[in-house]
Amino acid sequence: MRKKIGLTAALEDYLEAIHNLTRNGQAAHSNDIAKALEVHKSTVSAALRSLGGMRLIRYTPYKAVTLTPDGRKLAEDVVRRHQALLGFFVDVLRIDPAMAETAACGMEHAIPREIVDRLAGFADAVLACPRRAAALSLPSLAGCAAPAVSAAAGPGTPATTS
Image (cartoon, rainbow, N blue to C red; front, side):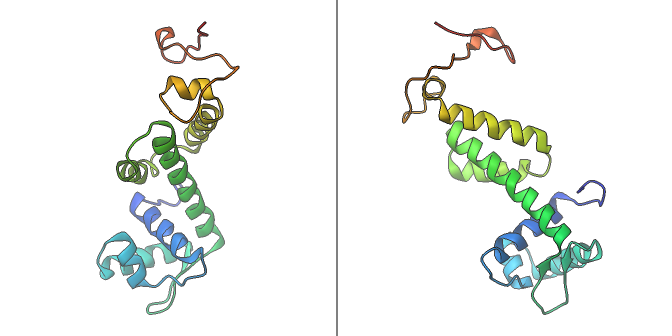
């Protein structure tokens, strides 16, 4: 849906920020959004006008911003992609959380839903299977009935190890 309406990565960031500000009942005002995204208030106003024109938010200058149902759906998709990538980087790859946050924020806009779903499924499988996790040097896990994957088998080719 975001490609059909010409939603840029920057506008997705605005939807995500509005979602994050309002999910706990807090109002999202231009100043709050500017602070969350570390941008100037005039930049926020222009982005909010664009999102309002796309009917993804309800925006009136000097009033709280709210997501429309379509805007909420898109924002939740961006948040889901962000969280899946962040979790994969931190929990599976053991990347520093700050570096993982930066990478997830950049990749969330370009990665298709199918790839995110597969990454999330892979992360769940690795974290649920202690032997696979041990092969990745995840210290809190050990032992698993499922076969491990051999690196010698090559990319995309599962092979059991004895």
